[in-house]
Amino acid sequence: MTYHDEARRDRGAGKRILLLVATIVFAFVGVQVAIAGQGGSGAEQASHGKKHSKASKRQLRRVRAELESLQEKVAALEARSGSPAGPTGPAVPTGAAGGDLTGSYPNPLIAGGAVRAAELGSATVRTPNFGVAPQSGVDVSAECDPGDRLLSGGIDNLTSGTDGVDILVNAPQDSTRWRVNLANTNNFAINFEVHILCLEA
Image (cartoon, rainbow, N blue to C red):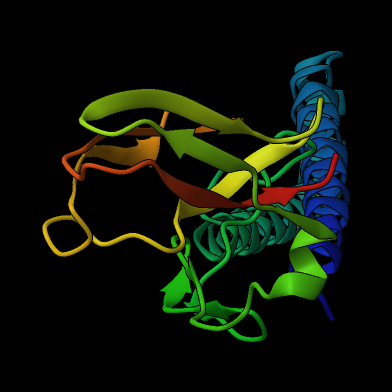
């Protein structure tokens, strides 16, 4: 049974218990009114009093016992659900999390390795090529297709400090573009590629 099924079951049980409480309360009030309404002369009260007093007292004791029992049931239901029983009192999940979650309720975490390419959807790889003149620099961006979102990126074929280049920026520019800013210190032109991985819309 899922957490939502348990919550619906608890709410249904809460409704039934509260309905029973209301029914017993009305019955209790009716008994009290009936007792208070016994009138007539002193002789009539004397003749009827002995006949009904024991039955009335037994009925009152039974009603009070039923009320106490129902109050205990309502209190137990509220303690189990974590909030007042009824249509607006959902149960709070507890215990260890499973499946793609780890930790425990009410604050589980996504388990390691639970989110893979299949869960993310299709992704595309783009590798635009850029050129840099000798002793100059460029500031360029590689961009995903319209509607796609950038996952990662970077320069493919250059290493700062060892290929005669100084890479100043090699990082996401926003949610769809990867930015590269570099200086070519060589006396000849160079080309480089920016590899980006984009999540398809």
